[in-house]
Image: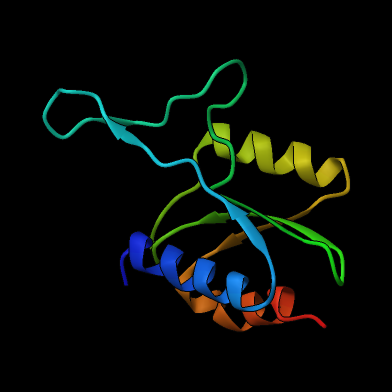
Length: 107
């Protein structure tokens, strides 16, 4: 499963369970094969998904990776800072589907 397919599955499941989802997509730079997500200030490495639900209330940050994908140093810094602030933070790969269902499917 590609990261894009994995992301669609997680987003669809989040929507099914009443979450609003934000994702900032990379854009082509004009150089062949180069993509970048335009961010300002400390945004480099921000998690792939921010999911918010009013009832029952939940805020979830998720970094999604393909089976062998690695978390970059910038991504890890964001994940650590969010966790330290008390946020629900996850790194999800396709083998974490049961955890995705448990976290996002809570009633």
